[in-house]
Length: 353
Image 1: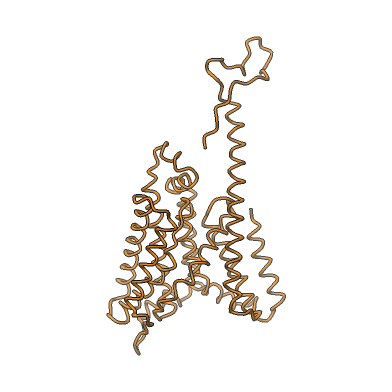
Image 2: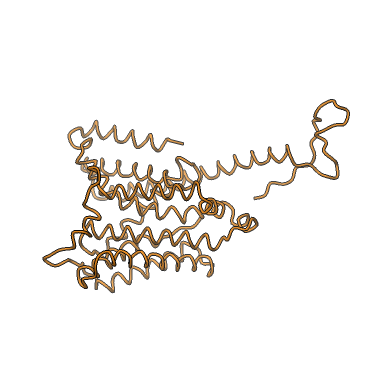
């Protein structure tokens, strides 16, 4: 259950031994927390649809559009940055709603639907920028906006606290509120969700809306961090986000996507990539590391899910065999001669799938 967390600690110890002068330092830790916060935020956004068994491939294009729109409105049109952030969040709601409706009402596979909307978002990014970068003028961006990414709280980068806040919110919603239970039930067995009265379509749409809002927020933070509108910046975040979300489903609660597991997975990726880069690894090592980790994550997540399903089936069968008998035969677990329970139970009801 906690093997991935142990791997993160092991990797940190390994690179600390190999790079004692640069890796286990406060400067490097701050750099890791700053650079990996946006992938972590995006991974948490991707986690929500994955809980329902769907995938949002538009997040990489969404974060690209959001940060370009932020730079475009602030640097070129002088719109106050708080208004821009609210507009971005509203746009995230619209994009998430569109994705959810395409998946649930139009019955388009989530891979195809979100890939299509992602391509449209990328086209909008190119239309706004004309394929060029948006660079602020001599006065730069408003300090209040840049402080969204470059300030610190308790000597820790503020972006790290965004991640912590999101993890806490998602943990509360997924583990302790009815909404989270609905999401998990829909992801595990959509038919059973409908039979017990859970509004499956509404739940899935809300999952995509949550993903869209978090993606838009990540775009605002990315704009404040980079301070340049790069139309091609978003695509590089898609793969790490899914690696973190899928790999996170193999820990803490194996077989189930969860916020804490995603945070642990992102930590493993952050430590590993930072160590490899400081070791002087070639530029192609990063995408190879992400690709191999994604394949491993998908395999491990599938194995954990199958193992959880088999365990649940065994437990469910035992419980039903102990409690469910054929009413026509009577309760043969209670003989009338007082000699104790009989060894011949009644017929067991089939386990629903």
